[in-house]
Length: 107
Figure: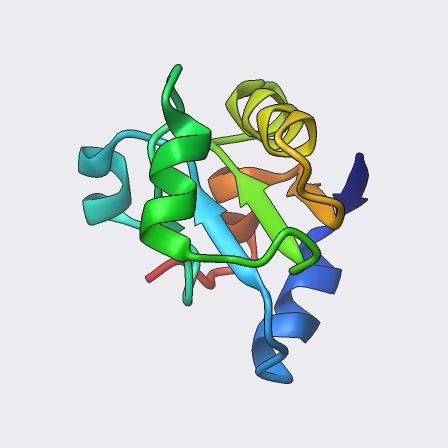
């Protein structure tokens, strides 16, 4: 799975590129702070079904998942679930909220 850095993600957001940015943390975490443009689809056994329902992304759409920090594995696991379900352009934002917060961009 491709890895996206903070700098790459910021460029994509600033350029208003079309992609799905998915926060896989709990809704409470998302409500407290999240990366701009992100949609919250909590990690779990039914993640792929909820993602399909809430995001409606095509199988070849660019999808970037993230969680709290580089040590959090929820985004990698969620990305792997998407790939196993046939999504072909999945990446994860390795720095997560911690990385985004260090550049002062969390809303």
